[in-house]
Length: 168
Image (cartoon, rainbow, N blue to C red; front, top):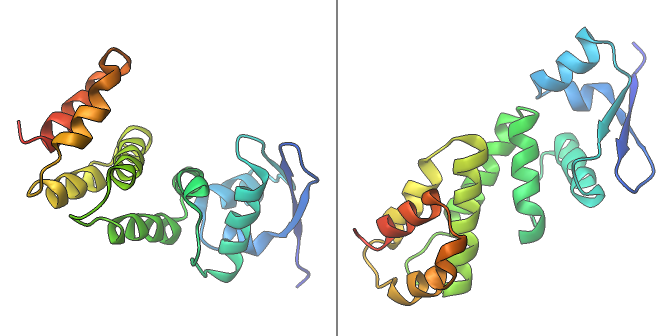
């Protein structure tokens, strides 16, 4: 059986040619677009080119090693949108493994914002609940104070979870 190539069009980059089986093996979404709708070209122009390339590499070799913080959110979002469950779990495991009581404020901010993004975009509370549980036993007053400095720009979800983190 001949391998079918799918063209992936990427924002501000040359298109990529990817084996159909790489895309459809773990994703019902890709399977639907390719097998049922008979698309041989897919647009991924909502994502950065380097993250799309990483996503496609991960689909092929399943080696989740060094994901840069800047790519994490977009990669996780892609795993949710394209329903690549093993990658979504790997992203959540990576985030969970970084949760520790002795985080500095910049790490707390990264973790809080990533958990907030998962909560909003994926409607999954587990990561935020895990972060709050991990940090509940330590003094977060400096972090909370810094986060609330631009209180008028915060929405109710941010405020609610920051108050939970503060124990109120």
